[in-house]
Image 1 (cartoon, rainbow, N blue to C red):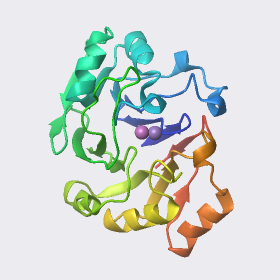
Image 2 (cartoon, helix red, strand yellow):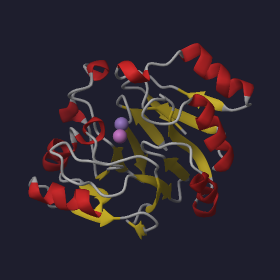
Image 3 (cartoon, helix red, strand yellow):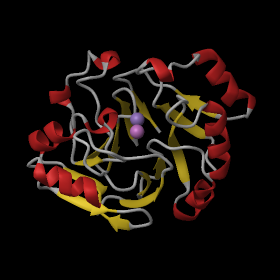
Image 4 (cartoon, helix red, strand yellow):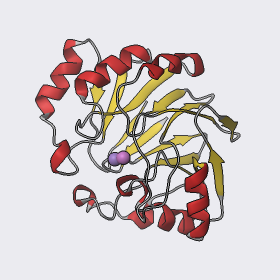
Length: 226
Ligand code: NI
Ligand code: MN
């Protein structure tokens, strides 16, 4: 699977030619200035929760591409009001087969208000399963014992975990999460974008190395094959 990083918690993963875009936040990300939001492909947009640093570009990209947005029921309703009609509502615990891949919505321990103050329902994590492999997109979350359930739903090739602390778990908790989800290949997200979540890159990489795990920190705009 080709994984492209667009900064913060935004990734594209290509499965069987379909582009899955997670939590688009590019236009207002100072670190992602070189990314042209109009060039990003999307067949599906997976929305973990409603916070601006995850949804700021969703309406624009969804309208340009016609991508189907997969989100909590309340966010689906909000998107419909913004004129985004191609949506698929889900909620914690539910799964759906989209053809090329299946999405299982799992617990994320966080909050989920929308930018205009609307209620966004539960924040979600996603376990994606497909013939090309399985992976876990944790969204914004604390370390939670619910992660022990993830291996029941997917044999993970890699996991996208937040490591920036303050609003989510930190690198040490992400190592613990990788134990629970039984996946030693982690891609870090939700770090460096703004003041509260700046990380010490060397220390962070060492924390994973000491635990015998791989932490990948692709550059913004970089594509890796996993
Ligand atoms: Ni958030
Ligand atoms: Mn966030």
